[in-house]
Amino acid sequence: MKKLALALLMIMIATISCSLPKLKKVDPPADPTATAVPTATEEVKIPTMPMPTNTPDLQPPVAADPIFSEDFTTDDGSWNLGAWPDNAGEDEISAGQYIMKVYKSSYMVWSAAFDVGTSDVIMEVDARRQSGPEENGQGFICRYNDSDNFYYLYIGNDGWYSIDKYEDDNHENLASDWAPEGVIDLYNNKLTAYCHGNELTLLANGFELATVIDDAHSMGKVGLYARTYDEANVEIAFDNFRVFDAGSYFGGSSVLGPDDPTFETEAIFSDDFEEDYGNWVLGDFENDKAEIEYGWMTLSIKKDYWVIWDVTDQLDLENVAVEAFFANENDITSNQQGFVCRYQDDDNYYIISFGNNGYLRFGARKNGEWNYFIDEYSSDSLINADFNFAQATCIGNELSLYIDGELVAQAYDPDNSFLSGDVGFITGTFEEPNVVISLDDFAVYALD
Image (cartoon, rainbow, N blue to C red; front, side, top):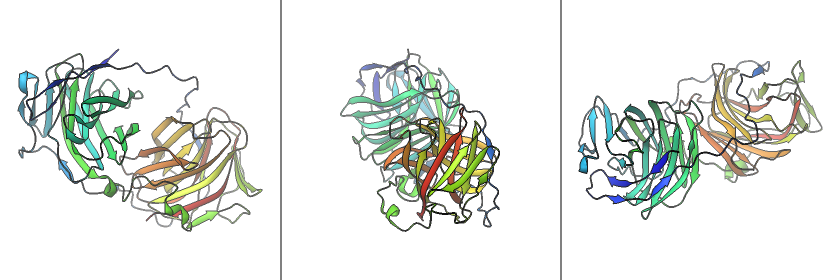
């Protein structure tokens, strides 16, 4: 069992240290009895519809200019450099990197803390294990007020991650676990952290590891972080450290709930399915069927591992909110249902989807290949097995899902893959065929 031993805290420019309690990392619980949805490549039925007449430029957009950035090409005097007291380690800027070396075991340190003018920040950095044990820590601090009050978010090259806080010199772990296999690399990782409002989120290589809610610290500075566990002598190199204002990064607030006045305005597109208005591809096909009856759009998927989708063929939107009622007609909870946004063509779009068993899939279909940002069971019980009112938003590079007015999950596309596009819905099967999903009162709201 790996020890989470926090033996000493020190700010790099200070000479005072203090002993901290030892904590043990608890092994993750056994896998749940539910079987994870297989990740086999799905076959798809592509709706027969023309390409959008206005295909947006697929170059990744620039969400916002950073309010703080450092590529470590030169030493401008703002970073801590040199040896630490008691030969505990040292820092240097070398070969365009900020290198933090920890010579002692069970020791954690952080860089100089920078005031960037806002406490709602998004931080990014490229982190590399230059040498030393895989069991280490590397990441960020935020909301730093003093050495007794701050948050820190980090990963280890062994696959462990953690979000923690100190409040009045008392440590509390807010979230920690092993990342799914393959998410965290043994050497190189692109790390992202969100400290926005009362939400703290940690991502590795574009995969969201954890989001927690905590109100202890509402303001403070930012910086970089490294640590050892039982084995000493780790060397972590950081590069391309960038800090963004969270509001500017997402083009406004990154959290848009269903109670927002946006959902009270007139929809720019809606369908109550009382009759066929010519908006969708209907018919009885070999592997699926789409029909409008009794005031609902009913989608029957006859084949296992099969996904179908449809879009309005009328919209080209950047920031968008969409909603609909979803009903499970065949009691198979291992299914997929939800929304499509930023649709370019049949090989390029975002999905925000859920199953009646609570399984979530958020991701991008890019050049015909799937890249999932979330591909796991929901940690709460908000999703009903039979009937759900679902709402979703695509804002900047953020994808969010709400069920009955409650936020279920958010994910972020680190590549900002799509600028804008059409909007629609998606349904599908996993290991069980003959899923039947009906939806009603589909509505789209522009957020620009």
